[in-house]
Amino acid sequence: MDVKSAFLYGTIVEEVYVTQPPGFKYPDHPDKVYKVVKALYGLHQAPRAWYETLANYLLGNGFKKGKIDQTLFIKKQKGDILLVHVYADDIIFGSTNKELCTGFEKLMKDKFQMSSIGELTFFLGLQVQQKEDGIFISQDKYIAEILKKFNYTDVKSASTQVDLEKPLVKDGDADDVDVHLYRSMIGSLMYLTTSRPDIMFAVCKPTLGLWYSRNSSFELVAYTDSDYARATQDRKSTNGGCQFLQNRLISWQCKKQTVVATSTTEAEYVAAASYLLTKGFDAGRFQYLVSSIRMLNP
Image (cartoon, rainbow, N blue to C red; front, side, top):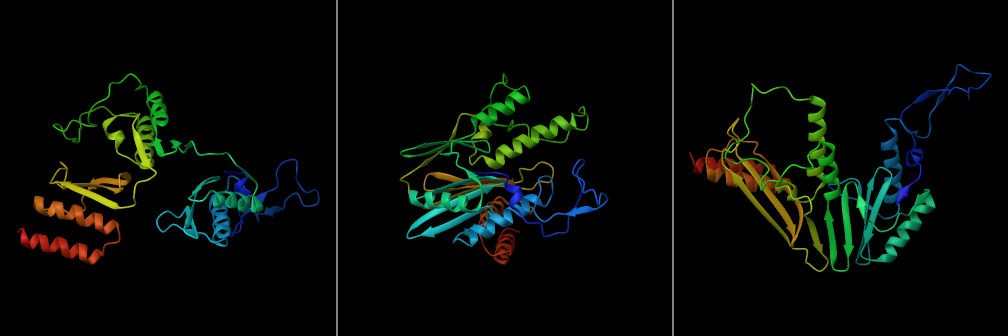
């Protein structure tokens, strides 16, 4: 669904004043200014004001906010679930019961001017193919646009993103790069790696994606690994991991460890413990675990 003139629904809490626009000045008081009550496009407060208006409306109608993603709203009713995700003035939603979707459309149209776009096929660079036995998500269109933008359409693909035998190091003799071009490229890649829910981009296969089977269970399985002293600049270890709901990849991460491991064993335990920490594991236990490992591996 798309909200028409979404930012005009928000109410401004702060005191904001605007000058009278040319051609519409009040004749008796041409030097006066207007105090803004409703949000206007262009104001920094407008997106937040619109989100607060929408969130309060949904929360007042039986929805709950997601604990991690504050733009996700959840409603449960008699064993069924309705998920609503908000991105500015675009809203995507789905449910285990089609009647809940119909009711949500009516709920929104009672309060806001809405337009129903139909079944989700493309959203924020994600291509979505809905089939009888599952959903396939990919980003080959967005990747193709990036390659075309930076003149990389004729470049050959590689099996890995970097040469493992030649780790990245600082090059003080290299020519300076175009700062604007570099930032544009990195920004495009960062959005790709953040929004894309898989690791297929790492092997440069843009046509691959994720298949979410309809009938698979919700068993959570996690994998984690580390690479001892892999970072060449500070000798910190790296760790990575991925989480599956049955055979459906839902999240992944790869980063340097925050502490310097003194052994391969410690690096492995830090990788496992850091994953538990992100999933609600007690921070004190995490520090105790690392200290205990160092005592065992002096």
